[in-house]
Image (cartoon, rainbow, N blue to C red; front, side):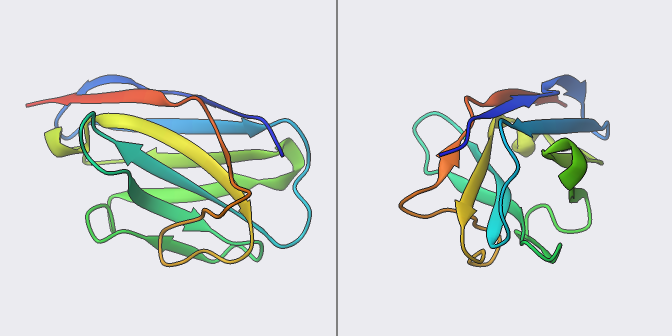
Length: 124
């Protein structure tokens, strides 16, 4: 498994922007996908965006057109640029890495690695 560390969360007003970062402890081999999830306490985890080993990106309908997922292989890092934030985007955001292709905006599997999460709070 790989260790993942997220950063960049915080509090912003609606319409603002945040950029989340996720640094992996080692280089991921070809065939891995990486992705972002979010979760509100008491609710199911939601897949937000994923990027596959070739750089193909997928997004959930709730963030499409507002969020951009990207990665820098040289830095072993994954990013999520979040623009035009809404109060309903408030949640703990998690980075994940798994071997295989994403399933829509979801990159996860039995061997997935997860970060500890970073909180995003958007006020109206």
